[in-house]
Image 1 (cartoon, helix red, strand yellow):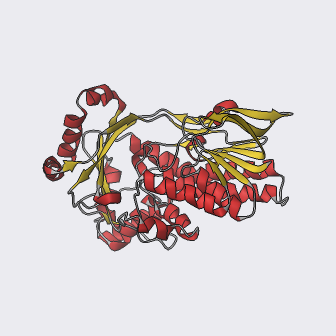
Image 2 (cartoon, rainbow, N blue to C red):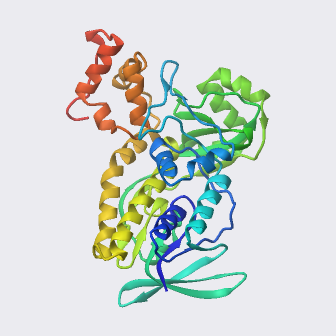
Image 3 (cartoon, rainbow, N blue to C red):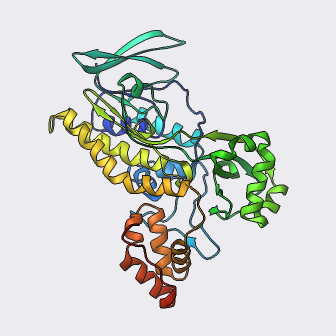
Length: 409
């Protein structure tokens, strides 16, 4: 009998299991994959996620993998920087073969039991409450495991969410698709750049001396893009930053393209009798802002805190987990809304153009802009009138050129 069974061992499930095991709880983690193994990902971890790895004693191990630090991001010709948030001054974009294996090993080292290549097929119920899982592996055949609580950390196509019939609380249809690959021989500054046509080009360094290069377009271009992935990929980079497009032609592509349509942006109900959802299983948004891994780490920790409160008797466990869901939804709304807006890839409005120009015109502006991007300031705070006034003054923007949001924005 376990205290908690976690279904899914990647960047949401393994940290949750590790943190609970470190507090003395008996934890089982199961995953249909073996580790190390790859998964579709933007790789990037924002400062709050890096801070969690640091506080858990895992950041040094990540750095030892050889993943290069990101000390500055390029958002425009004048807007380059990276803000210090939670004491973090550099970020990382590790391969998932590296990050996920590190997290699984940390869960094991903490005392959690991990079973790989195990596929959950059903949940065990008792009087309306989830009390375990049923599944199988090629090695053991069908098995049952019981626990006081079951957590689905099994991604966007979560089996646990389907088995508990977790309804969607909020859905915004997906607007874009992404394609990415890896190159050798590129010495590029990390960047995320929006083109005048609705498209995005980004690049950042990862393990093995490689650079991840990604492009994004609106969904209505998906079929056209798939007809010639290599040619269209090159075209996006050419159109967004021609000088980088020229360099890309001379670079050596190291791996195949990964081109994918993302599911809708959503919140699912993530707490119920004997069960919870964490990571993309409960909350997912477009990859354009790169918040998937960081949110998985941050809210995996929050769920661990609430489960510990319930398991230790400090609070009824179902109430504690409902509190996790409430806090997660409350704290991520700004990121969710900002991400969905960015995913529209609309040309910048006059207000946005004025603000970006002002932000790039002073150290104050750059710091506050990248504080917002890195999760240290809400977008509503950044676009507040008083903050914009300070940015305009620091940049020396003439009064006639200072634009502010209207009350209806």
